[in-house]
Length: 228
Image (tube, rainbow, N blue to C red; front, top):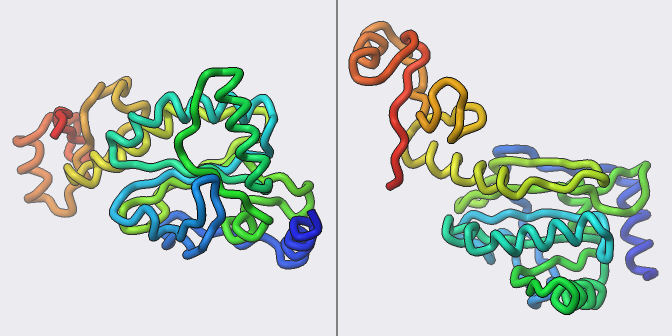
């Protein structure tokens, strides 16, 4: 308990140290429910989602962990791993996931970081003026260790796991096909499952694209979506 308080005092003095989208995920060694891990090295060559939760044995967080686990295979099918985090000791994590198994019949298979506050400080997950609990955050990291997305939720609102899955599929599709992803994809109100072709940089390319793709105008062209 003393170690946790010490780390959190340092956080309040130092302030937030938040990485940004496009930055390399910070290198760190963490204690988890599955042993020591080095991040992002442990997931090298894979996508991973690091998500923080305010505390163990809390109702919203429990529903979130169940939701993540029930979709764990879908994440792994997209070559994506999961890892949780909160400022709790490892035995608290272990007791909590045992409670989930015993009472909800769901076995949590992904690791959870037992943080003293150091990792949360590095990632900017604790507001210096609002207690010691980590915010409800999500970091989506690509196989090169680059942070591609950061999401933050208030304590009273649980995350939408299907949106996180949609984002990962969207990133992978955009990268593989050299396209952009429209709003509410794959059920966009204008082009449905269509994928947006980046706007042309010159007149010749613009004319060519209006012949090759479906277009509303030279700057809004799209192609059909298909799995690879």
